[in-house]
Length: 402
Image: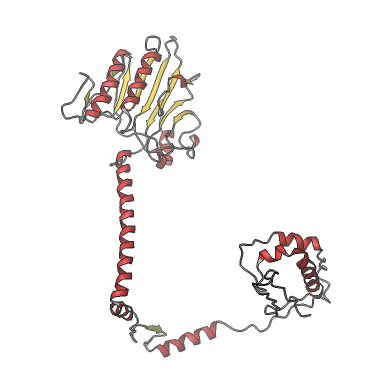
C-alpha cells in the first residue's frame, strides 16, 4: 500500500496497535534518517526499511516491511536488493520451503533500463523452485494488461516498455500477477507470486487514511520548476521596474516629487482618541492626555547611592593585572573590529604591543585600585607625521588624566 508515513506517524502507530497483522508492507513511505522505527510500530514488530536513496531527492519514495514477533528467525536478504528502493525478507516455514517477500517501489520517472536490469538480475538469482515467493509493491506501470501481457491501446510507450520488462521476467520466474483491475487501467500496486492458493481480499480501511489527492514526484518537480521560474520573473521585473524609476527620475523629476508630496499631506482629523468617555480629535489635547498618563504611571526614583567600595568589607579585593594578562587581551583583539572611544585601531595596538602593554597595565591597575573608571570623553593626544616623512603615520594614545 502506498502511504505518506512521514506526515502521519501518530495515526499509523495508533492503528497498528489496534490491529493484529503478521506482515505489513508499505511503499512510498517518505521516511528518512530522522524517522525512527519505534515511532511507527510498537515493540512487537521488527521493521525492515529502505528509504529514498537519492541525496537530491527530498520527497517521495521508500519502502517498509514489518514482521510480527510471532514470526521468528526471519532475516533480510540483501543479496536480492539490487535496486534502490526494495526490501527482501526470508521467513522460515515448517516444510523447508521458506517464504520470500519482496517489497518494491519504482517512481514514475524510473529509468526503463534500470527496471529491466533489475528483473533480469532476479531471473538469475531468485530461486522460485525452492522458495515460496510473494513480490509486492508500487510498480508505476499503468496501461498494461497483466493477464494477456499486452499494453492497452491508449497507453504511453514508456509504460509499455516498463510493463514488457516486468511481465517477461515474471513469466520466466513463474510468477503470476494476482490483483484484478476493477477500477481503471491505471493499476499501479501489484502482487506477483508463485503460490497457487493465494487469495486477495481488499480492506475498507488501512493503517492510515489515504489522501484524496496525492501529489506524485513528477507533479512536484513540475511545481518546483514553475515556482523557480516565477521567482526569477519577479526578480527580473523588479529590477526592470527599478531601472524605469531611475530613468523617469532623471527625465521627469517633477512627477517623482509630486508622488512623494502626496504622502506628506496630513489630515488633522486622522488621529482620534477615546479617554473616559471623551472623544479627542485635536493633536494638542491628545498630547496632553498622553503626558498625564505617563506622569501618573512613571516616577523618578531619585539618584542611586552605591556603597563605598574602599570602606566596605562585603567585597573581596581586586587582584592587579600583570603584563602577561594585558598581552593576552591584546592578542584577542580582532583587527577587523571598529575602533573604541580612543579611536585607535586594533591593528596598531597589536603592532605596537611593547609600547602599549606598560601603559595599559598602569591604567587598568590604577582603575582597579581606586575603584574608578576613566570618563568616557577623556582627552587624547594625536601626533601626526607627514606622508612624505620617512617615519610611518602613527597615532599615540593620550593618557587618561589622574
